[in-house]
Image (cartoon, rainbow, N blue to C red; front, side):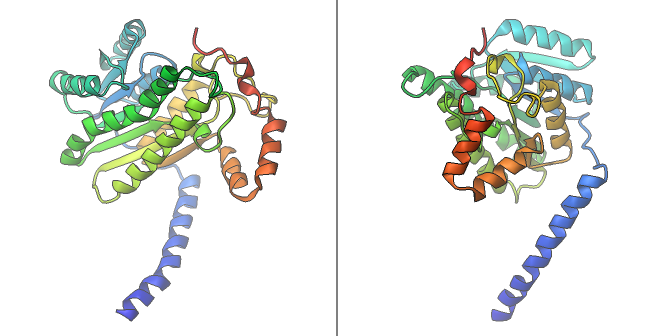
Length: 302
């Protein structure tokens, strides 16, 4: 028994070196992309913003069917018509992912009308852009229900069938604010941090489930209506991401089975700094970069 443990101990660093070298090679060589022609993709919050761009990107890359969930029928209708004009079958369902019963009911309707979902994209989110003391209690609950608990309900609704088929992918459109919170968006930052923990746990839990994987995307500030009015001190150095870029990189991450994706790559530096710098230094970075006051001009969706 002791020799077995000793062998495992000696093999472990070799495995680590191999995996690091493999990851470095994959950065240089073009990866093999997963074929999407047999995949049914469901995008929550798919009527507008990043969700609409995700639907377009999956359609552009040949997904078999696109299903959109959201709360605003007008936006869902417009996106559905656009996807159909691209020659891809598309359906929409009115669904508030923060409502557990509604999620389960609409998931059943999707299976009966469209078929099994093989790629679930949890994109729906809300932000109120206020401090804790200025936030309405119902608004705080709404963000947690939609941004965090909604993923529990959607994943519970579709994951069991993915496990049966041994074919599925759970995608979470998160935010870099899950790793580095800012003032003025306490509801959003909290919900995204919870969502990140959910996806970390889920990703590890799927390690022994063949054919079923997960991807978490953590983008920097993206230029959508959702964060309208947010201002960064040095926009030339830290320009907001374009939603089409986030959508393209997300679909690529799914096709290459990438577990975690930070956008842009410079956000990796932020993660490293957070792990080595004292809190006082991090506070100065927030003040210098303008993230300390970036929500002061926040307007949100009109």
